[in-house]
Length: 96
Image 1 (cartoon, rainbow, N blue to C red):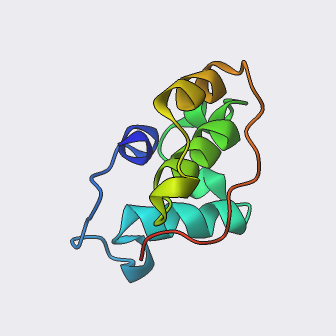
Image 2: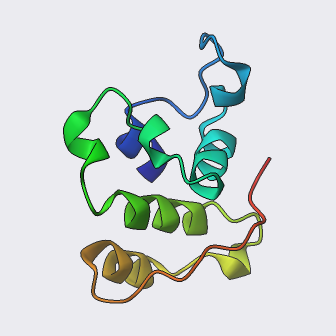
């Protein structure tokens, strides 16, 4: 859900011209790993310049981990979103 809010897109968009962007979880992870978060919000200048963007994407990637044991608790998610606790680097694994 957080990725949909960040990018203003649905979780799947098979109408997109770029096949790599069709599944938002894959695309967001690729953008994050490739240091191209600007692509997630390319039509929103305010979001592109928002210093919280990387933190929000990192939290979202934590929340979509395939292994439920790796996902943070809702309390921890809220703390990360509020900036109360640091967001650790998400693991590489994520749902395909």
